[in-house]
Amino acid sequence: MKILLFLPIALTIATLPCLRAGELAWPPVFPDGKAVTTLGSEIWLKPPGELKDGVTIAKAAPTVDFLYFDCQRYPGNPWSVWGDGLAVGDTYYTSIGDHLAPRGNAFVYAYNTTTKSLRLLTDVQSIIRVPEPDYTPGKIHTRLTLGSDGWLYFATHRGSTRASIPENGFKGAWILRCHPDDGRGEVVAHAPLPNQCLPTGELDPERLIFYAGTADGDRSVKRVQFLAYDTREKKVLYHDDSGPYRAMIFAPSTGRLYFHREGGRGIAAPLARFDPAKPGPPQKIAAEVGLRAATRETREGKVYTVDGDHLWEFDTRTESARSLGGLIVGKENYIASIDLDPKTGRYLYFVAGAHGGSYRDGSPLVQYDLKTGVRKVIAFLHPHCRDAFGFVPMGTYATAVSPEGDKVMITWHGNRGGPDPKRGKLAFNTCALTVVHIPASERPDKR
Image (cartoon, rainbow, N blue to C red; front, side):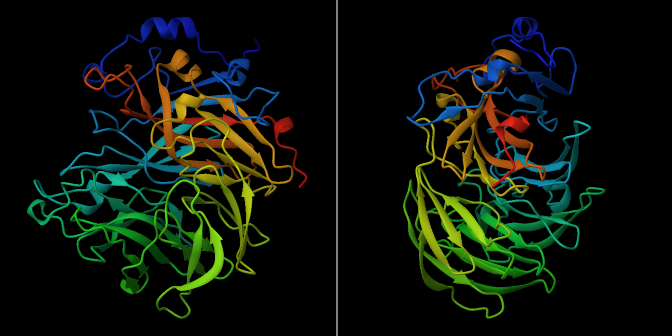
């Protein structure tokens, strides 16, 4: 076994007691006091169980950086990650939240993958400044997006569905922004649609239009609204009651947005197109895709979408789509974030089991080769993170690939302390970050 940078696993296990969730130490720390631990080992290539036919495993072992988020100074309900991350240069931007209600909070971080330094940029409560005991949101559920004005944009979502009610002072969600240089934060809009949370959203970085799909503050109301909000003019550009299921396709080349209201493992449906040049009801087009997560647009105008064990390619130039078939490597098929290698445009990366089931397949980071259709596991993060760090990586809604395509950042919700004694099974209670450094031999750069 080849060790590059080695944390003494035996020592770590011996000093990490098996605690119940209520007895966990906050904030989570390593016994040796380090903020970041790096482990390079062949152990990352050891599968814990069977894989689907045709799935391969990398031959060269990656190096993995592991760290906890330092805002976790009290128990969450639970600490978890719900909004997608963003890689810009050497920096990975990500968010986590405590899921508490009615007084919740969520936090935005910047992690420098070169210096291995974590920096808290801001938290929701410090921006919105809502006095107690009124409602404050415990989640950021939208993608973090960097605007052409240099600000990071995002929106809030509730913790408990019982908390977002007028009796708790809830009027609607917030669209927020923070500056990555100094972390200063600002409210862009409060309750742009009354009584609506914003679980789906991202920014058109050039036009500075924030797009969102909503969830009603009254949980008995099942409608999903669509919102296009002009952050420059501080006004609603367009809205209606036919919003996106849980994801959208944004095409920077045209400024158009695509989505559909269907949802479920592998369900494809016709897309609707919203054109900000002609604000009005989204127009249905012929192209059908499943859409629980989508990549960014390539230079050739391609976007790759996933829902369940199925991958599609959508061409934003011709507004046509084609099925690319199966994607998963084990039994878990819920994928909430999928990323394209921006350097070559050849490789997709994802982790299945977003809502907590990843560990059942070994929490694999998967590379999908668009040229060959080969599915390859780059690293199995479970049970090796548990054995080395006392943390079970259970799922993610936030991944990103570095601009050079050599690193994949994953923000995990996971478990410390073992199964919940009340439920008798693993439940996530802690967030952590892994950076998987992919050997050059596992990512040939010719398309």
